[in-house]
Amino acid sequence: MIIDFHTHTFPAEIADRAVTKLANSSNMKNYLSGKESDLKLSMEEAHVDYSVLLPVVTKPSQQEHVNKAAIEHNEHFQETGIISFGGIHPDNSDYRVILRSLAQNGIRGIKIHPVFQETYIDDIRFLRILECACENDLIVLTHAGFDISFPGQDYVTPKHILSAIEQVKPDKLVLAHMGGWNCWDEVEELLTSQNVWFDTSFSFYPIRPMNEAIPYVWKPQLTMEQFKRIVLAHGTDHILYGSDSPWTSQAENIAMLKECGFDEATLSAILGGNAKELLKL
Image 1 (cartoon, rainbow, N blue to C red):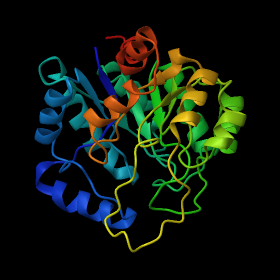
Image 2 (tube, helix red, strand yellow; image 1 turned 120 degrees about the vertical axis):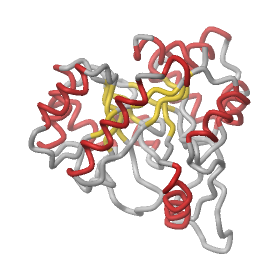
Image 3 (cartoon, rainbow, N blue to C red; image 1 turned 45 degrees about the vertical axis):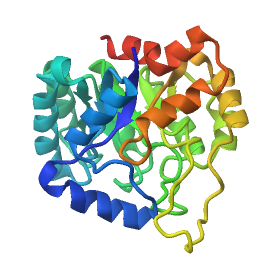
């Protein structure tokens, strides 16, 4: 079984506009249109059994619409192969009601994005969400590290993630982008011993710039050597395959994982076994 733990789509009527805006802000080409129909085709071509959708609530008022759509998505996930997480904003004062409702409606987890939501991961508003998610047996997947569109914004870098972990001790926390995009040395130092999962999305896959004349302020992506070192240091049972589609190719990410030289059992766990257990499929 192959499970892509990190994907994004947008409603068909706004997908082109949303993806173009994000591509321009990050100087990064997209592989897919951001429409669900394209993701389904990609899944068929890459032999992906399930993809996890990760919606982002950028203002408190959006959560109701986002979560209604997530619940509707999940009513048909057995046929579509698409599982949607819910979303929440740190300024949703009724976070307990929202998270309890999501759990009661069969949602398996939530996505938070401290950079987009302009709140540190160890701020009390996120700490109480992490704690309440634990109480409701919900996975929390957070963007981790810097964001390519927001240079220097350290809302969810390893030092802040470690602070949150030490205060709340969440039991189902997934850190996107191998624990912290573009700060992987700190991930190795601070996070590989923690009880969290890392997803592989947008970490060692090459960035395709929209305009090659614009210089990046970032270091290169993870080398395969450091990627493998983090995987082995953290534990292969806490690594989840993720593509960050539409920004990278599902099939090419799988091919790169197969090139790492992991044994069959380890590769199977990363590509889907660990996710299957975490999602209780």
